[in-house]
Image (cartoon, rainbow, N blue to C red; front, side, top):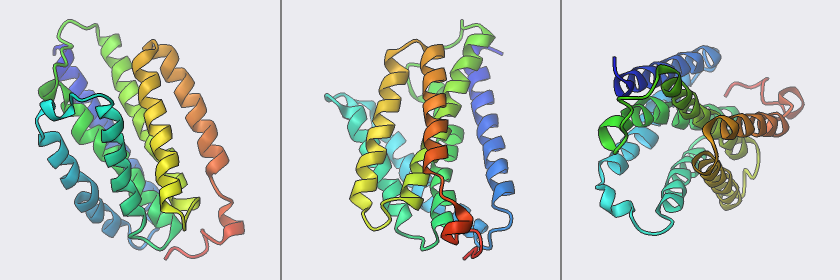
Length: 207
């Protein structure tokens, strides 16, 4: 198995495992199946349309910043479709999982992304970096779900900044050190942003 095939297999497998983990963590939520189906309409289909666009459309300066803004608009819109804070959180977490499983895993087929001669450990490191995006989207899910609830534009701007900084750090610095730094910072942010569910009454009412 060459590097491209290994990357696809591992990325897709990591996405499937993440989706199974999501299903396990939301098994007690009455509308978890609805969230999963809704995420296909809100994230998968628009994402497929974006991926299908020719690469020439993304060659203008700061195009990646604009693409991040589009992604965050999808998540911001999704956050306005659910009343329950926890439902909003689990719905937006699915954005990162679908991205890992259906977009990042397909990069060898859609980009000039050649890993044929990479060592297996190098490919594994790239897969771990791809999985890091799921954590980043989880942090933004916490912002959309538990903070700025009546200020969607404030949440959108904050999440766009986090998403853009994440991408820039991962592209500008050596992979290992960038990954270590962003995972540490993202975990710290998630801990800080996570609400007291009992105090806020979020765990008592699954609806």
